[in-house]
Length: 111
Image 1 (cartoon, rainbow, N blue to C red):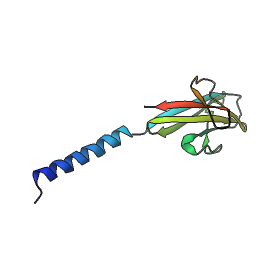
Image 2: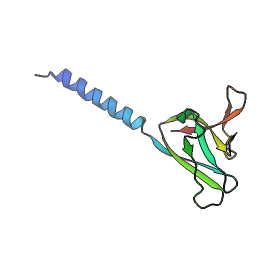
Image 3: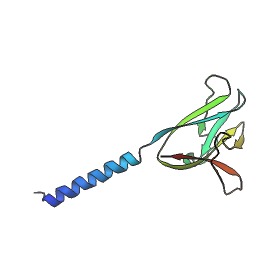
Image 4: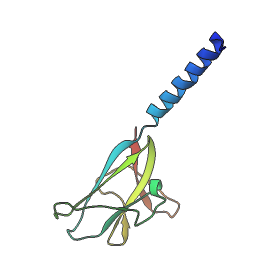
């Protein structure tokens, strides 16, 4: 038979797990970059091991507005766009850091 203390401990553990699940819930994050229509654009980032081909961006209207949506847990992420094979920071994002190569990475904060 479970004691009152054991039941309280189990409830407390369940409550902590539920809080962690909510706190770590992933959020939809949209990325957008404008470049020449017909370009090939990818999103490379710390959340996809900097793969230049992992996340293709789509120009749905054919107007040069490329978008991609990712589900990300709360945290800080660095990223770049790869436009026609050329790595570039997000020109619309003023938040960036210097990376180990001495170039810049854009930064997005997910809360």
